[in-house]
Length: 182
Image (cartoon, rainbow, N blue to C red; front, side, top):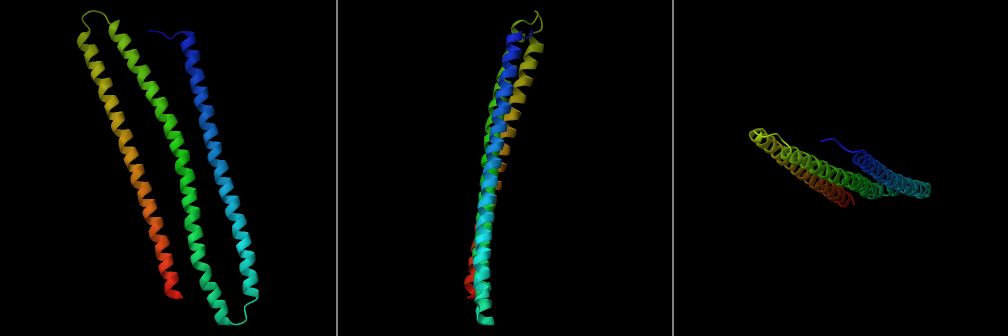
């Protein structure tokens, strides 16, 4: 079975659309990252100016120590918040890519299965056992691919849960340490 020029052109158009769609998603992720970094930098600069003014108005060493101790909890919370936003941007961009790639993969598998079916229908007489073996191999490959996709999804979910737990634990540890120093 050979592909017609229209089929080839249609496949190329679909691939180009997918490429531009993924490129747009990548740029959207980069835009979010730049926005996050600009916002964080602006906030850090403002807080540094405020802290500097506070340090310059300190009257004794005890007041300076209290001021410095009060700086660490908000800093740790902001760092955890920044990390969380960064992770959200990365995971949402990756999810968009995965969604597009899964759609492309499903379409490619469907087209390949159609090709196998068409070839099986046009196979010469006496090749039924070879066709059956080919269909069985394709079916096994599809099952293996589905299993791998599920395993990757589960691993991704576990990694996200671990990240969330570690972030929560770190935030609670900072709060506990800060409350103990006051």
